[in-house]
Length: 225
Image (cartoon, rainbow, N blue to C red):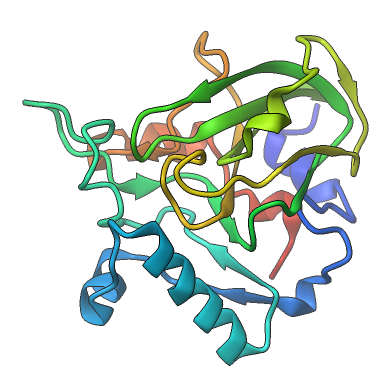
């Protein structure tokens, strides 16, 4: 039996946003703590941050900015979702972010079914979120799509079948999407640990070894680079 990593690497022609945009039109975006500190980015101002992303795309002659897997970030310090009292701060990103305008179509990465969905409304959270369940070559795993618009949840039912490449949602704008510049948080999860409609997209340093295994690099599937 193949491992999940092998199953992911075997998949081809995967897109999760903007099907008309080729990966040649993607550009990396580093939002790690040293970079955002050096640039003095306005991390608490969604519109200013969106302007920063748009400027980055314009300068790079690109249409989508991507990155973030295992980045340690300062983006989350504004929210108690990531730093509860007497609990280690969660600031290591364990999904892949794809930055593009609100309203952009979001696609199912693979054939599957809707596992769960909900609106995670806390400041800095996912906002509307969809989790799909997949069964491929003996492996069961999940893909999470966060920061969607509210309409993305309309008509969804648990167990609803979806096809690879079909439009399942659209990106949301701040504050619907958790108060971020528009982007998709895309994450692969081996074990949802009983959760529904939500799963951590950021972990603490002490949790990292577990989450690196449970949430493998989404680029194994997408193959952007």
